[in-house]
Amino acid sequence: MTTSSSSTSASAFGMLDSTPRTSQNACSNGSTLSSEPSTVGESDGVNKSEEAMPTKTRRKVATNGARRKRKPRPYADYGREYHELMQLLDLNQLECGEIFGYAGRTSRRYKRGEGKVPLSTLKLMRLMAKGKLSKKQVIEA
Image: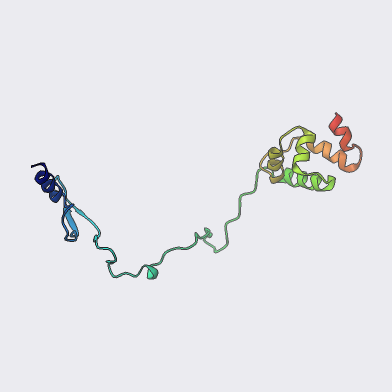
């Protein structure tokens, strides 16, 4: 008896039906839901390759046709000077961090203008560039 009740409940939910589902199915509360055809390979006649699907995201363009400018970094001037002094002194970001007492990541932020370079660091680097201080003197200080 349990077999027939399970087959009855299964057919009531449409599990044993071999016919394809229709476009509208009845829910238990009496409302209807729309669903896609369940047969594999069936389509609504629209070729997927013909549909306009964006392949790349486009950059936003201003109303006059020019591209939007990037916002300047808040401390870009300090970052440029820091970068120029690093090149002049032949120092990399990690070495600058070690000499002046901050992490290499912080040195990268200074170089890109994301953080304000401490004035003491810039002054020491300027003195080193002029030859008034050596790298060894700064490290020992």
